[in-house]
Length: 125
Image (cartoon, rainbow, N blue to C red):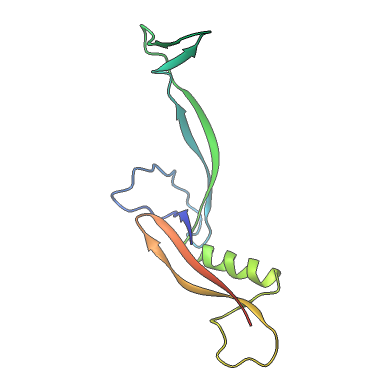
C-alpha cells in the first residue's frame, strides 16, 4: 500500500499547495516547510536533567524538504513502469499457467482525503 500527497487537495486539507498553471496530468515538485520548535529544550547534566523554558519565545527553525505531489493517474503509471522495468507482468494472478511467470496485481487504487493511493500484490507461479 502506497499513499502519496495529491496535487488535488480537498477542502479539509491543512496543506497549503502553491498553485502552478501547468497541466494537471503531471505532478508538481514543491518544498514543504518542516518546523523545529524551540519552545521546550531539555539539557542533560552529570546527575540531573534540567528543563529550560526561555523567557522569550524563540523563533522556530524552519527547514524545507522536497516533495513531489502526484497528479491523478501518475502513481499508477509509475507503479506499472517500475514493475515492467523489473520484468514483472502487470495483471491479476493468472488462472491458467503453463510457464513460470512473475507479476504484480493492482488490487485497488484511488484518491482519499487529498492523497492518491495504490495497493499492489506481487505474485509468482
